[in-house]
Image (tube, rainbow, N blue to C red):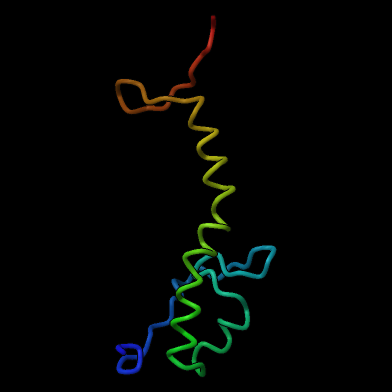
Length: 89
């Protein structure tokens, strides 16, 4: 397997801010995963990376929902600027 031949790179993107559940908002790893990355095996790294996509979706889901709700009330005008829609019936 390729994981055995090549080291898996650190997923850190330099945005090291923790959320309430102690996940990094940049790479979505927990504290233990971040602190032990340099000593764990490639197999363990692969398992962590596999979970990061799910974590990202779960953590960002409320934000995406809020953004969609905000955008529902706005549209782009002819010049590409946002304008608030009025629903006068």
